[in-house]
Image 1 (cartoon, rainbow, N blue to C red):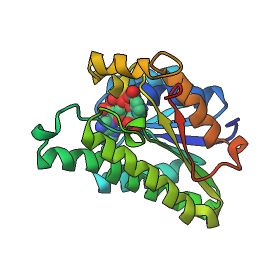
Image 2 (image 1 turned 180 degrees about the vertical axis):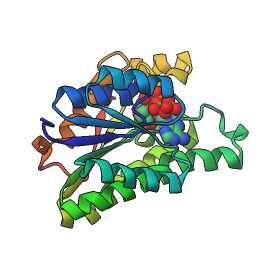
Image 3 (image 1 turned 180 degrees about the horizontal axis):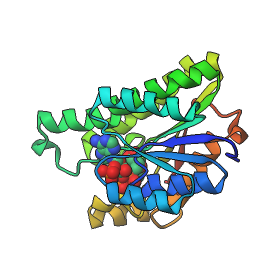
Length: 240
Ligand SMILES: NC(=O)c1ccc[n+]([C@@H]2O[C@H](COP(=O)([O-])OP(=O)(O)OC[C@H]3O[C@@H](n4cnc5c(N)ncnc54)[C@H](OP(=O)(O)O)[C@@H]3O)[C@@H](O)[C@H]2O)c1
């Protein structure tokens, strides 16, 4: 499915990102992933996935994103697919949220994602080919008791996906997003127990999802098998 393709996954050290890296490799892709703080996890994943490569990226450092992606292109020539997975959540009630909290989550989840995409797209536009898979969240798509700042940034990913797909169609570049429900790890781990129970009670699958279930869709959308799917935000939420 991804044979001969180089796939760049942001936040490969996280719960979902590491599983997307594994799945991309299993489907024949060459895996390049970014990490931020967790150098140990990056080293472990590189040892686990043959031929993979880890690059440090802080989504708060726009200039660092540019230089890292440019250097990567010098080295690998082409990036065929980008998975915008890295993000943070903020589990705090709205009255406690300060300006710096809003700036932080917007800068990481929206601005950082925008600039990774911009710099990866330069090479895709040159090649007139490529696919982008964003990672949204059910938090940005439904009325749920979830952190408001996080939900705002994830709703922005939906609009980002629509508009980017529209602008990139002339270059043959597809843009879609996967929209996970609650997962059994990662940012979902901070969700209070009563809210987790509430989610499960309203989920047709009767459980939280696992990273592999989302990674499968991400790989499919990144591959040419999804050649007629563009500008879509696709839920992987067990049925809510
Ligand atoms: N888990 C869920 O229940 C769930 C549900 C819906 C959607 N999602 C989405 O799935 C995606 C992955 O989430 P996850 O649950 O796997 O979270 P996670 O385990 O906390 O992983 C987050 C990843 O983002 C990276 N990251 C954090 N801050 C960064 C920064 N400033 N610059 C660059 N990278 C940074 C982390 O890097 P380091 O570890 O190296 O620092 C890590 O690789 C997110 O987009 C999230 O919104 C998750």
